[in-house]
Amino acid sequence: MEKRELLLNDYAQLCREADHLEPEMFDKYEVQRGLRDKNGNGVVTGLTNVSRIDAFKMVDGVKTPCEGKLWYRGYDCIELVKGFRETGFGFEEISYLLLFGKLPDAKQLKQFREILADNRTLPTNFTRDVIMKAPSNDIMNSLTRSVLTLASYDKNCSDTSIENVLRQCMSLIGVFPMLAVYAYHAYNHYQNDESMYIHRPSQALSAAENLLMMLRPNKEYTELEAKVLDIALVLHMEHGGGNNSTFTTRVVSSSGSDTYSVIAAALSSLKGPKHGGANIKVVEMMRDIESNVSDWGDEEAVRAYLKKILNKEAFDRKGLIYGMGHAVYSLSDPRAQVFKGFVEMLASAKGRQKDFALYSMIERMAPQVIAEKARIYKGVSANVDFYSGFVYSMLEIPLEMFTPIFAIARIVGWSAHRIEELINMDKIIRPAYKSVMTRQEEYIPMENR
Image (cartoon, rainbow, N blue to C red; front, side, top):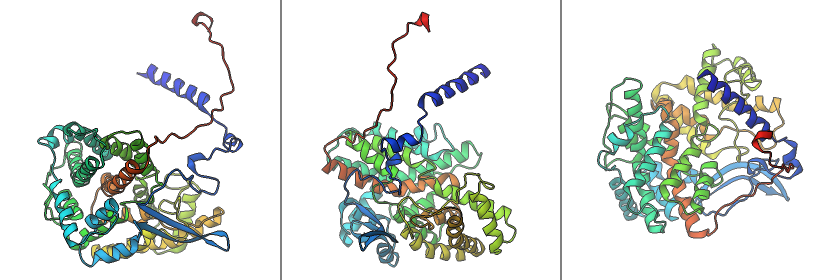
C-alpha cells in the first residue's frame, strides 16, 4: 500500500507538470476564466425567461451598482414572499409560477398541491433496498444515487417530450424531501448508532411541514419554524439561470439526456463547497469566532478577529469571510434582505438573540474590514448563505442536511430551466477551448524510451 501511495504521488506530480498553464496565458489568448471577465461579469451563454437578477443599472451611460433584485417570472421575489406569508406556505405556489409562468388561482393551486402530494411516494422497498443499503455521511451523494436509481423504475425514462419531462420533474419535486431525510436517518443510524426514524409524509402538509415532520423523531414543529423554512425554500428555489448547477442542467439537457441523469448532474454540481455548501462554511466560521472571541459584544475584538480570518491567520486560513459578497450582487442580496427579518423572529423565539446580534454585527462590519484590505469594485454585502445556515441550526437541522435542503428547493428551478431548454434550444451546448499545445512529438518506440 505504501508503494502504491508513493506511485500515486509521482503520478500526481506528472499531472501537475503536464497540465500546468501559466496564468498570463489566459490574458494572452483572451480567455475568460470561469466564463467571467476581469470585472466579474458572466459571459452570456443563453436566454431565459424563468428568472432575472438585477445588480447594476445604467446611470448616464455608466454601469452603476444598485440594490439587488431577484425576479421570478416577472415578479419581485420579495413581493412574492410578502404575498404568501400571510395566507400560508409558498413553496407549492411559487413552484407553479416557475414551472408554468404564471401565478395559480385557488383551483389551480389546489390541483397542483394534490399532484405533488400524490408524488410523495417511493417504489416498493426503495427505502430499504436503495437508501438504507449503503448509507453515507455525504447525503448529497446518497441523494444523487437515489435519483439515478429511480430511472430504473421509470418505463419512459428516456422520453424527452415536455409532457413526460413535466411528469418526471413533478415526481422528483415531490420525493426529494423523502430521499434526503431518509438518507440522513440511515446514515445517522448505521454510522452514528442513533435510532432510526422513517416517517411517512402527509398529503395534507406543505413541503416545509413535511420536511420538519420527517426529520424530527417526535414529528413536532411550530408554525413559525415551518414558515421560516418555507421562505428559505422559496428564496433558494431559483437564481437567474447563470449559476453552476443550473448551467449544468442546461448543458446536460442540451445533449438529449434523460431527466434523472440531468438532475443527478445538477446535484453533483450543487454539492461543491463553492456552490451549495457555502452556508456550512458560514456556520463553521461563526462557531470559530464564538470560540475565540470571549465578548461577542466587543466590536473591536470581533473586528480584530475578522482581520485575522481575512489575513489567513485564523479559522480555515483561506482568507475568506464566508457569507460575504456574491458573484453577481453588488450592494445587497435581496434574498438576505427579506430573510433577515424572519431570522430575527426565529432567533427571538429560540432564545438566540445573542447569536443574532453577532451575525448582525458581522454583516455590518465585514464589508468595512474587506474594503480596508482590498479594492472593491462592485460592493460587498451579506448573501443568503450568511443567514440560511444560522436558520437551519436554529431549526435543529444537522449540517449534513444543509446542502440537501438547498437541493430540495433548487430542483424546482432546475426543472423550469430543463423544460425551457428542451422547448427552445435545438443545439448541444459545446463551448470552445483554445489549445496552447506547441509541441509536435515523434512517436518513440518502447525500447528507445
